[in-house]
Length: 68
Image (cartoon, rainbow, N blue to C red; front, side, top):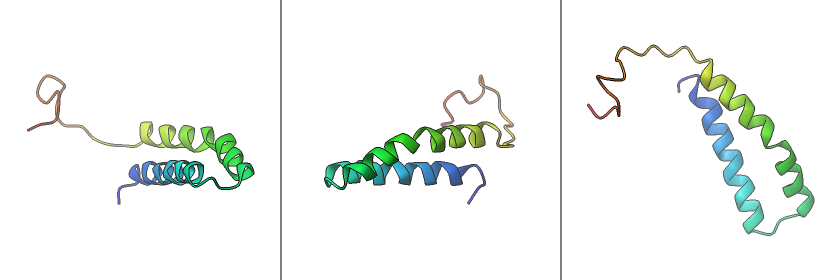
């Protein structure tokens, strides 16, 4: 797994657990705790993805939608 994809998978799983907890009517304290923590993993994910050293060899004009 690539280094910059780990935060994406982790934060996505956090979101899935959060939404599942809401729909399963779990403890409201747990849901509110996850809601209050939710900005931290999102900021961490954005930071890690933006700071990832990914080398792009094509320009926007060549592959503007990465379909080739």
